[in-house]
Amino acid sequence: MYNHHLDTFLKAADSGSFLKAAEQLYISANAVTKQINLLERELGGLKLFHRSPQGLKLTQAGELVYAEAKKMIQHSNTVLRKARELEKPKATVIRVGVSLMNPANTLLELWAKASEHFPNIRLEVVPFEDTAPAFTEVLDHLEEKIDLISCPYKTNYWGDRYRSIHLRDLPLCVACAKTHPLAHRERLTLDDLHGETLITSRPGLGSAIDPLWAEIERDHPQIRLKGVDYLDMPTFNRLVSSTELVLSAPCWSGVHPLLATIPLECGYTLPYGLIYALDPSKEVLQFVTAVGQLNEDS
Image: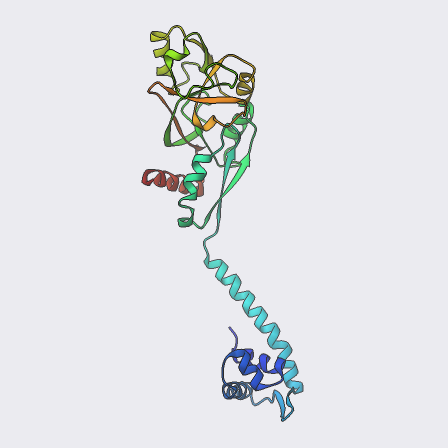
């Protein structure tokens, strides 16, 4: 955007010598002299330097050109930088809601493997509280502060507040206090739960747990079932000082340091995925589609 002979002119003026300017520019002194002569002709025959055996000294015209050339080059570089930024695709920020009960590890690990293919997408983690009212608030205002959540999603307890995409099926586990007699078992079966109280989603919520509830009632009446609408952090906190058990999943294994999480061999799983707005923005929909494709390819 400017005559690049000005770069040579500035080097010569700063160093006071064509030879020193040539060394800094990695060209010959003769090439420097030719560029300065050409610049003077292009400027209508202006004389930019007083030349003597002692070196170079700017003329009055040269001093003016020197000052304005620096401004011109700086302005030109600024314009070019802004123009290049306009060519770059604008970064899309996807805000992922996270909490102890919804840590988003699965999503973040999946995205880490492929984020280099989507340089214009950046994930931002937004924390929220682990209570039913807080979760309801997030769902009612998706895309205001939080765009999506990575969590078990199959239930009609929350109504039709969101859309979802399936990522994987999580094996079921049993959570209990580390002081519980079952806490040190490597695996559990339904027979191992005889005589215990098991807290889980109540039937009728459209949950993947409904068939398991029916099987327990039919084949394992020795297990006392305790239905709840929603598993939240207070439920797990109470479990620490209780003899009860909670039907859990690997995504909740780290919610409390005083709880143990043991795999349950029962043949049932918990659908896990992303939940997002019913009418998502173009950017969120593109991200969800990309994650879905990444999940299929992995």
